[in-house]
Image (cartoon, rainbow, N blue to C red; front, side, top):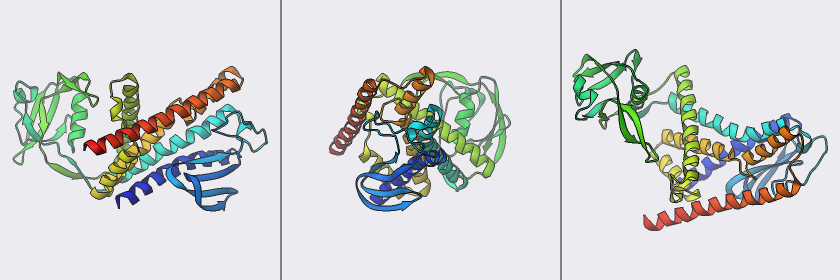
Length: 351
């Protein structure tokens, strides 16, 4: 069941990504020869809308082959009226952005679907009050359930944490204690802590830790859309920061995962339930969108970089340089793939 879930989720993510490219290319009148989910030998091929739609042997990606665009040989030009090459750099960039954009849109839809479903998350119930903390000084106690900060209704620990960390003024906190509402006023304290990358940072806190209590929540249409938008933006920022920290050496290369790690995460999520599966699929979709925007030749971001150069200089990149950069891009991509696979195999034997 886990393998089926992995292949299904990955195929949907790739399909949506390539559908973004395909749709905008067709809108601009570009002939699309092939639309394939997977690489290698074609197992099934059907022809619709003057395009060959295929399911290929190796289900680890996909591609749209447009007239005039060649990733292997970017100097192979075709100047027919229905060719990708005939488009202005701006229109080409729109086609290139459509793939990652479709992944961000899919993530939003998945987060929105989760928001509408009843699902469990951590309750805003205090499990521990730290010594010498603003919470202790104000009189908060273990077992208090925070239900409001100032005028904002609080449902989850995440909502509460976000509100506290962004506040630099005295807050009025309403808690439910043994069924009775109680009111407290306290200030946050700038505290030394660590972020998700284990870097030393300062964050505003009040000195409480959560109780292991779950609460079932769901959102209406409007709040669900707001929540989905915020989740998509937050996930995108997290992936961008992760890439930045990886390049800077803050995140060790041993943390890079490959297809085995992705399959394991999807498999575990599918066994947990549809909410977990949707959340993981949304995060991977954002990941796919972000990574494809990196300015690496052979990725969408690399092509966008070349087209921006053409827009600014009014001339195409030097063909020799273009070929060298494309080869370098493929070397980087293959290197990352092998690094991820190496790390996956290492974890398997160590774990």
